Length: 199
Ligand code: MD3
Ligand code: FE
Image (cartoon, rainbow, N blue to C red; front, side, top):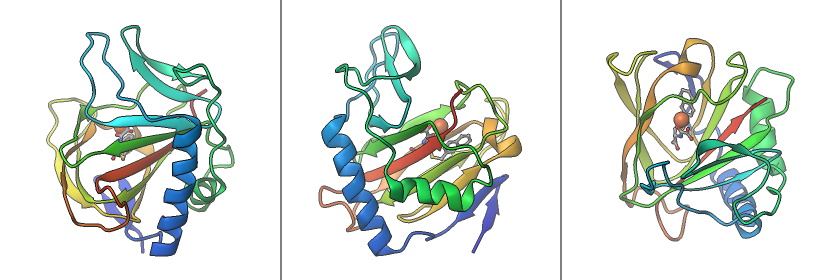
């Protein structure tokens, strides 16, 4: 089933429980090779979300600002994007190009992500694919201006979103989790995977 929410294509429950478990296991291996870290803004403010990446490029932020980099802050290359994750991109992205960055975000029960745009990528014709795993999260989407009206919907474990067209440059964020809504992650919280073409 495919729904539409403010120009965002939503596939609720695209991944069944065994597929979600396999993806979590694959992401755990990614985080073993490239440990999760709390990115910092250029002002030294730590983000509440922890992140790591897989693929040719990873997203990093520190006192030099935010950017895509070829290596984890430790100096190691990012691990390859897991096959399970690539299969989701192939199923829903609608493009032939392969993703270059698989950003993995971990939300503890109090973490959030403020309203922002994803505009560090060079080709906005390329979609972003997002996979939600673990606790429910309140997702907010607005328009192309920060002041545009916003609308919210809950993202649940196994849901997949495709951000293309106008929605690709829309302001969006995660207001809060609903702790204890999923048993997928033993430690609780939420993992979000976003797949992007960066160059
Ligand atoms: C709408 N992640 O990593 S995923 C991000 O749940 C990010 O962790 C959120 O925003 C999360 O940048 C939201 C859904 C999403 C991802 C990318 C988008 C929505 C988007 C790009 C453009 C518009
Ligand atoms: Fe984003």
